[in-house]
Image (cartoon, rainbow, N blue to C red; front, top):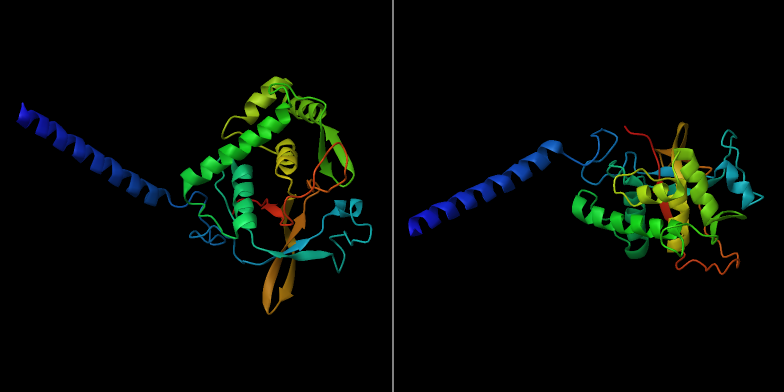
Amino acid sequence: PLRGRLLRLAALLSFSIVAVLGSIFLERAIGPPWRSSPLIDDATGFLVPHAYALIAGAWEKDVDADAVVDTDARSPRLLGAAAVRQVPGDGDCLFHAVQVALAHAEGGDHPNVRERRALRCGSVALRSIAADVLSGSGGSCPDNSMLFVQGERWTRTCDLVRDAASHEGVSARRYLDRVRQCGRWAGGPEIVALCNALKRPIHLYGLADTMSFKRKNETVVAVVEDELKALWENEGNNGAGSLTDSAVTTVEIHPHF
């Protein structure tokens, strides 16, 4: 009996070692959690070049009447420079991006996006927050509470969910069920929900293929602010609060390379 137990224990240990080694080799074979490209630093996920000029989007006139917003103009309004970072494109990419940007805004650190387990835990929490906001006070059906969108725009939660559900051809309840499902693509409604819940601005950017600038002898690729930009402002309406921090959470949306 003792010999049998020892043999079973040895077999179990051998299986565990093989499983661990298999996981390590599989992870190495798969590589980073995104499509490998010479335009992406696989060690960190940052896009090359590392400096991107931020250009005001066409909607900026809603907030700043003096802004130069024509991206075809010779001197478009520059909002500064930023780095663009890749995150896993597994359906939760929006929440990954917000989590990474939020961690840097709050702690000044760039989290390791290759640590998939930690990244997923944070993304699941953000997805739950967005779903709770869109579900309303009842927890299962959106209500008439007001959500800030951008500029002077506000919307009722029920209207936002109804329009999103109609676009997908499902009921509001079914749409809310989908929002809670990990791996489901998220967009405008979820961004608005996170902006209001976190009380932080969330900016969307897309790569501009034809614009670049020179800065200290290096080319700075332009990213243009998307028309959909959930910018939190303290309007004092409907009991809305103000920013909890002056730092800005930025999400850069860009094509696959």
